[in-house]
Length: 158
Image (cartoon, rainbow, N blue to C red; front, side):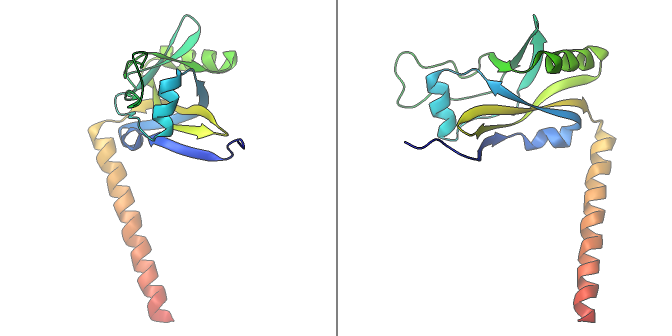
């Protein structure tokens, strides 16, 4: 059987980009059990409540929901468990120092397979206030309207 190539996104946390200001992103490997991998390959996962933390010099991912594998047996995994993330020591220290600084959190943005290996994209993020969210939506809407106006003007000139 040929090895997998490329990238296949399993789940993405679109709400995180709305709720947080993304400072820095990292790619981390995940330590998973066999039924978790099969469930992910079926495209089933939810990152909505997920978060990351550093404990004892190791990076952990918690509250990410990977449902039980339907054809699994008595050794199925618990859906919401702590999962170890694989990062370089320097990356772990950088994340730890930033989170310890205050106001920052570690948020998973997406889970995907890269060349057959399960990966998670993490972000060091700062929570947005309500008025920041409204401002972002307003800017996006203004940009969309400007693009429409430019497109309409371009079509008139042709």
